Length: 478
Image (cartoon, rainbow, N blue to C red):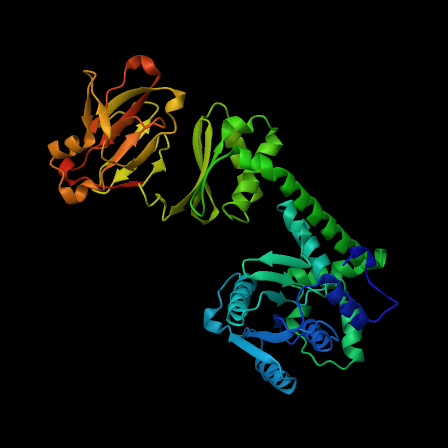
């Protein structure tokens, strides 16, 4: 539906609602839809409007949550049960018991509980559309709150009329109506509802916007809500167009992608774009490929500084939800961690080595590749490496792996394990350190390869050997 039609005065709310349903084709006749109902005026009005559709009337499934936050919640539960029984509507209920309430962040926790419940109801009823009763005032309040709080520009869209999700879509068919219109209509057709007394609590930020700020803005311009809807739509369109234009460039710089685990970008290919475009591409891939959402703006600024810092060819940054951003010369990698351990692909246990960082063997000993020597009782091996050798990689050893010897020959890793008397059952956990050119540098804790001094800059494999080599197996990173 065109946003330019705005808030109709010449037709009734009910007639406008019917027109919107026919024009938007959000569902088909008799298709199951889940309606989030709280017994408040907005959701009860939405339920009434759905029940009185002449065309494209859906199969209504009412989803109701008793949050146990108010004394009247028991009466509300009895009310919605009786309503659905009288109107022959299917009702699915959930109770968020007080013992489940957190001490802090109760609003966010309640929302998480509701939407987890809604997803279950949708799945159990083979439905793909969730309807909520957000209206124009909700949109204005949300956009203003996000503007005041700060964050990324995408959040300023506020509340979308239709939002795709993993389970289908969330539709807000009342978004073009004001709270005043809904109240007038509900009163005119004698809809029964419950008032939430917490809506008057001015210690809650949304209530301050609702009762103190938005009314003053409406006094400045009675068409204010329509303009917020228009701005939200325009911003959503601009963001979608921007993402569509970025997609080819993002695919160009993407070197490798392992869903849910890792993606690697070519820093060299990115340099043809401006700095702003580069960080936008990284943001696009993080959000769209890896599905990492809500990264704070300051973290993208840190990523930007690390990316563009020519004096620091390697580095790492922690991201939300156990992700790690790694810069290693001409490669940028975002990789998943669990309990501070980088996830290793199942086939070979491979992961990237960060310079100047210790990695622990499971027997308690450790090793690392450093840019300077470290004083102490350590075993130190010097390698002369060029930029093309990076990033360095750790992976499980394979049959055929060989170490270069000083005399020009090679020794198989399997022979190194035999000579070190590594038990057969422990050999599968043995790792090798290698260059990006697949040249084996060392079997950490056992033996190192020989590299000529004229090949490049000196780097130091430093090993802190705590136990006998026959007890070594597996690698964790610190």
